[in-house]
Image (cartoon, rainbow, N blue to C red; front, side, top):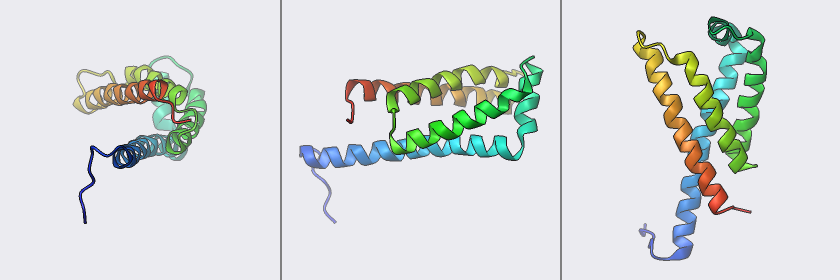
Length: 132
């Protein structure tokens, strides 16, 4: 098997497109899992919402948003907007995990901000170099 020449624009485009797709798949699967988790055990998310004095019923729009946004990420639909909205979602939902006495929740808090950062990079890349 020959190693692709990264100086060749065609080879570089193929590799970077494959990497972008893999990254979108990784992110998309994460949000699919979030939607499935909310569907299977909504009470977990509802309890977190209620603990912050938010209505537990918000779990259902969150489930729909997670699912629809995941599909958009995976298929590359409205990528800039979806990535931005998901980044804001990750930042906003991180408040539910900011529990300094619980190392597990703090790791989720930090993970949410890291995912938001990746989504912002995806958004900026799409805005700078639209795939259309």
